[in-house]
Image 1 (cartoon, rainbow, N blue to C red):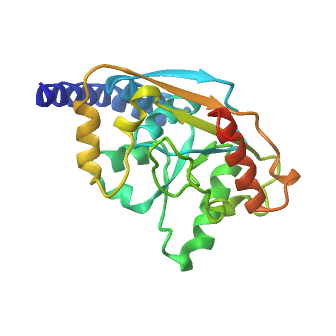
Image 2 (tube, one colour; image 1 turned 90 degrees about the vertical axis):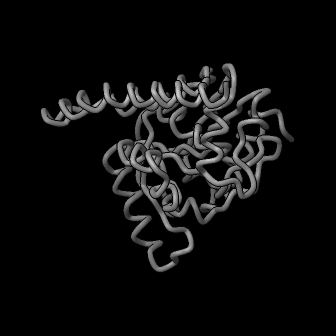
Length: 241
């Protein structure tokens, strides 16, 4: 049954993609803002079994969402709700299908080990913010098990040092409830194996996105304090310390 479930969900994903791509191309042809990547990614979450629940109201522009990170599903769920672009590790670009889908949502791929390219990567982020794009950063730097909020790496918030004019930070807590440990991507599990495990899972699960109260990064002294403030708000949203 697991293989049948994977086949059915993959077929549904392909059908949704084939339906969204021509419409996206049509919108782009007339130079209109296309809602189809966002709608498609929202559909991805639904197909894999996520039933999204939203607490709070996401900002729509001039915002950097700072979120905990559990799984590749975080991206379609957050994008489907907020329309955000993402900052993701460059290796994700090489994952079949997933990497290409990320490009449709304007994902900014960074090589965290490439210190020589840091300035260029920050410029890309600032350009995205200047175009009124919302962007999401996962400052844990990796996925966690959902039970423990990992330390935030302030270096991943370099785009906010100094903050671009008018930009605010909105922390986001992602929680998959009782299914969190089952769905979280931890350890050295290959990406394809994790994706197959999620697609094979029986039934639905509730994915809660808690959009915390935003704050002005100018009110805190530097990116380390910004990371600490965002982490504290995400922890509080999960009932931690």
